[in-house]
Length: 245
Image (cartoon, rainbow, N blue to C red; front, side, top):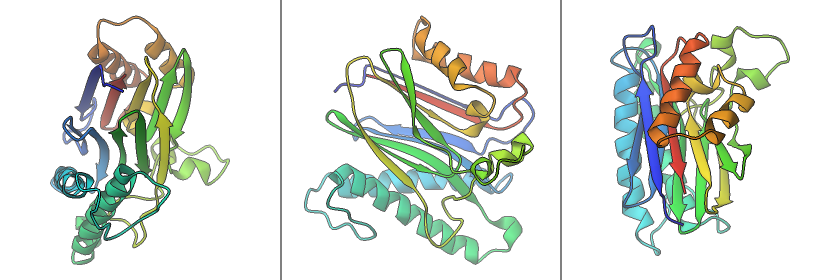
């Protein structure tokens, strides 16, 4: 299944001076990354830049070799690409966790992430922390990676900025909690990867409307999502990526 269109945008948001969000892609290896870092200026932003490079480098080393040894994780039910991306994330996690343990708490960094890798007509997605992913097909929208945040801990009405606080993250705890999903792609599918600076202010009905409506290209769709989130009072960094097949 060929990727027909791609768009991504990251921004510090209307109030913050530093952007700890980031995205990256590797078209040659069909790898797409969205991350939401934390730790503060000069900490979270630097951490996510290093993390995405580590993930890409490690993934490239082992995904091209069908006989590669998976040093940190292996599940025979997963595709090679699925095992490879989980090993890449776990390797980056271990490196950041080790670095964090050598620093005082106020200098430690972490990151949520949602990562997608394509293998022919299958798309493997892995989610960690407060990022999420949606699958759009034939006018219908489904959430395939659910954000792991405080909002599912209690039925209380949290303040929004606390409600999207991640329960897990790269570099945060000894064990890396994650979700992994596979979808078989079809012609006309769209996959959307989001940080909480976008999805927290939008309903799924609004997201569906923007994916359904006509647009000149994928960039216009991404821009419209960020603008709508800001118009609703977003105060966070924000990143959105759309993959159109």
